[in-house]
Amino acid sequence: MPLVIRAARPADTPVIADFNRRMAWETERRELDPTVLAQGVAAVLADPVKGRYLVAEQAGELVGQLMLTLEWSDWRNGWFWWIQSVYVRPDARRQGVFRALYDEVVRQARSQGDVIGLRLYVEHDNVTAQETYRRLGMVVTGYGLMERCPLE
Image 1 (spheres, rainbow, N blue to C red):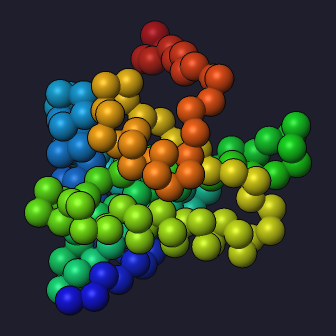
Image 2: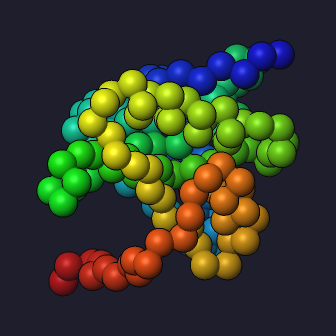
């Protein structure tokens, strides 16, 4: 069956939330609150300012996803698109699902005219993901990540 890459729809919320839950467990051994997670996914799907999801569908089932958020660069006068919430169902891995999603992101970014680059976070120990991203032309930057969370 051919792979279809499309924008996520509100009806996809339960599967996307489940994929996010699975990804958090696989990458960080972190249990996410299913109610908060479903609300967060629904909020993105209801408000494009928050971001947007692309999904990979095969034989009528979702097999992969990613979320895009935006960051404006005043230094470069353009947008960085951040790739987040990447997940490919285990039975669909190593079959080009992420590559198809990524290629669609690149295609859309190039067509915008004001997107200057793509960025993503990757866990330090996730060597498999890092190699995948390198094969697609991504490089490690000189930036580290710091956060304050929660804001109490």
